[in-house]
Length: 472
Ligand code: HEM
Ligand SMILES: *[C@@H]1O[C@H](CO)[C@@H](O)[C@H](O)[C@H]1NC(C)=O
Ligand SMILES: *[C@@H]1O[C@H](CO)[C@@H](O)[C@H](O)[C@H]1NC(C)=O
Ligand SMILES: CC(=O)N[C@H]1CO[C@H](CO)[C@@H](O)[C@@H]1O
Image (tube, rainbow, N blue to C red; front, side):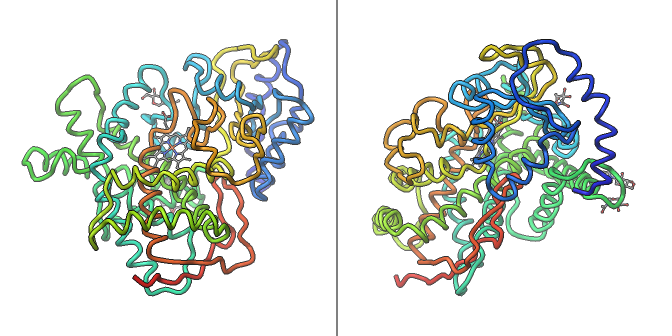
């Protein structure tokens, strides 16, 4: 991070920071707040960059126990981990702990964002999202996803000897979402949208200074353009629905417009549709692409898992006519493949934890978590707890033959804010793996297959592989 910008950030935040740490005389958790504002931010960022965040968590736990205080990104913070902490934070009511993104992210993602809402407001918008993302509805879109995946493989994999997996998976999950969420198919509009989203995402981890040459400004510009595009899209689709040239079930946007026009219990405004489709794109595209990339890496390096998956998928392929797309029932048969995906998420979760903000003082394990402080839940620490997952560093998909203990497997979060995209992610992951293993064999071809977290895992070399088409 640029030192001059960091310094100005410190000067802006200092009074607020002093106010927060002065205010309380309660029994605070152990730990040090470190240097003003900077606190432990740099060491944490370094751990993320070198993929040693898990070790960073463990060191802190060894030193201070299950609850400790620190200072991250200019805010005094309480660090929590463990099954009980997962349960507390994920189930906590919206009057005690709120999801609160920094103001910079709010400006990019919009104010009517589900991640910002709480209580009844959260439930109303969430119900609208889930009305599209629930299995009974999503199952109608399996064929559409299937089509996107096959098109992607024809364009970017067939005829190649070497491909770089991570950027391809990002473009695949983007294309799938663009088609299902916005109904924007291949073409100039989609290409423009990809670029705008990239700029937007860059800004989420940039320094929030809005000057004509900063990344943040470029991100805000992109956000404004996406918003205009989506607002126009909504008007067009509403007109098309009225003239019956679009179907209510065509995509996420038409689904919400249909709900809106019926004026029933779930009401959602145009602005909310725009903000929440942006949030869905941001929440759903890197996470799923990360899972797929880890799966491709795993299948290159674990022959026995690979053999089992190939067997399961070829069995399904044998019962299909050529060109026939996968169905909901086919996906239901991919039980082993999905357990491998869950075990991959256990060992390499795309998100290591969650942040919340305390809206009032509250006590946990004899300590006070003061109002205004941030709570950092290192939720994925339970993934490596040997009480919950015996022999935790062993890759063993059969663990997921049984339900994991509550609040122990939290790759999708938990409680009322649990990831509503679970089913979406399951469908696209299984369908993609199906076509990959039935059409190709591959091997890793680069010595450096390491990644850093930004905060999502990013493979340093993008994970290049050598591919061979299977003879059919
Ligand atoms: C493997 C893929 C995915 C993983 C690992 C994942 C993980 C998560 C996690 C951990 C949370 C909770 C964050 C918190 O409580 O702080 C979350 C929330 C969310 N996810 Fe996912 N996600 C995935 C895919 C998706 C997809 C495909 C979509 C959309 C189609 C999606 C949409 C959302 C939304 C809208 C929220 C916010 C929900 C709320 O605040 O009520 N996710 N996700
Ligand atoms: C980016 O900076 C320019 C020049 O200062 C300004 O006119 C514009 O409003 C900024 N963009 C946004 C979306 O704030
Ligand atoms: C954002 O747009 C403004 C005005 O349209 C322009 O002056 C500015 O250079 C743009 N910012 C970036 C970083 O591209
Ligand atoms: C904290 C914040 O800015 N969140 C906004 C999200 O949307 C709600 C409801 O529209 C606003 O009231 C909040 O200000």
